[in-house]
Amino acid sequence: MEVGSQKIQANRLKQSTVLAVDDNEDNLMLLTEVLKVFDCALLTATHGQMALMLAHSCHPDLILLDVMLPDINGEEVVHYLKGNPQTEDIPVIAVTALAREEDRDRLLRAGCIDYVSKPYMLEDLESRIRCHLSNVPTACK
Image 1 (cartoon, rainbow, N blue to C red):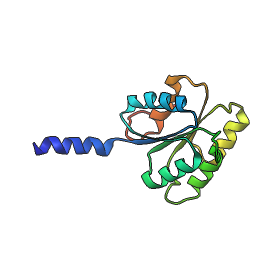
Image 2 (cartoon, rainbow, N blue to C red; image 1 turned 90 degrees about the horizontal axis):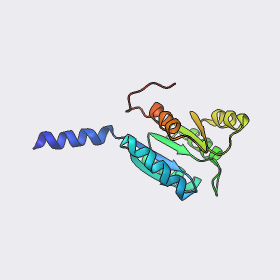
Image 3 (cartoon, helix red, strand yellow; image 1 turned 60 degrees about the horizontal axis):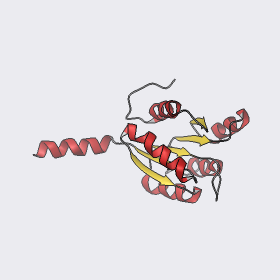
Image 4 (cartoon, rainbow, N blue to C red; image 1 turned 180 degrees about the horizontal axis):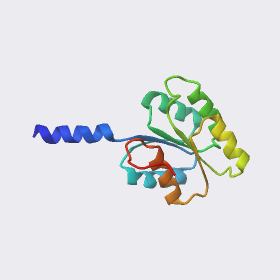
């Protein structure tokens, strides 16, 4: 019986935590469905301040961040995260409707490790997530 409980604990240790940040509940539901493929723990936030609080307290393995949020924008969220030693190493993927090349470049310079523009193809988002979750075996393209 002890062996089974050790196996369950080992699986929990390998499970990634992803923080999805979007002010649109439908987008959060879609991200939730996408993340089921990865069997990860999911945290959600609808505001930038809430995202910062969760990032600080839960230290997720990955953040999927909408840029246009009602309180502080995603770019500011990234600046706060990267400026804090406790959260600076959390990878952030911008998931945004801002589709211009200069928007993408600005977000990458701000500290995002990747960028997905809305509307996105589910396969594209899945491959980006897979690339940046350390416990999912694959190589980034």
